[in-house]
Length: 204
Ligand code: MN
Image 1 (cartoon, rainbow, N blue to C red):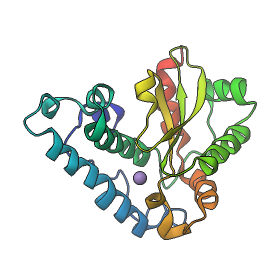
Image 2 (image 1 turned 180 degrees about the horizontal axis):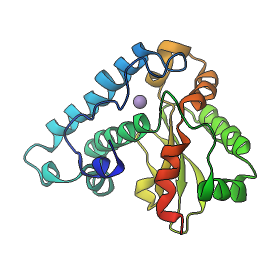
Image 3 (image 1 turned 120 degrees about the vertical axis):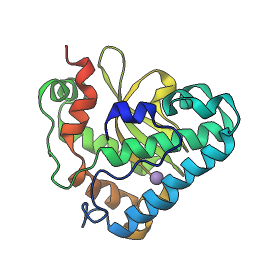
C-alpha cells in the first residue's frame, strides 16, 4: 500500500499492511480487528451507499474529501484518514526521523521529543472525537493541527504527514478511557521511515 494507492482507492477496503497482532503490545489484534474491519470498513461501505449513482462514485477518494461536505465528506474523510493512519504503523518501526524531515522538526519544534510531547498534549486536550495531525505547507514548514470529527488538513491545502486518531474506538478496548496512555504507547509503532517518505516532496 502506497500513497499513490491512497490517492486512487475510493470504494474498496484497503487491507492492513501487517498482521492484526503485529503491533502488540501497543495496539492489540482485537483493537485492529474492530478498528479496521468494523469502523474503517464501515465508513467505506457507507460512502459507497451515499455516492451510488452520483458524480462521486468514480472519483478518487482524495478528490471526494476535498470536494464534498456533509455525510459524504464525513465518510470519505474517515475512509482516507484510516488508510493513512494504518499505513504509518509498523511492527519494526524506525523510531527516529532523519534527513530533511528531522531538520524541519528541529527547526519548528526544537526536537523530536518536543514534537511528540506537543502532539500528545494536543491529542489529550482535543474535546470529543477527532484527529491530531502533523502536516506540511507548500514550503515544507510543519504544523500540528487539531480537527474535530473527520477533519483533515487536506481541506486546508496542507500535506498530512502523521495522524493521531483520538476517537475512542481507536483505544478504548486496550486503554479504556486513558487516551494519554494510548497516545504515548502509539509512538512505539510509528514508523518514521513512512513519515519521511511522505515528506520527501519537500526534500529539495
Ligand atoms: Mn478510527
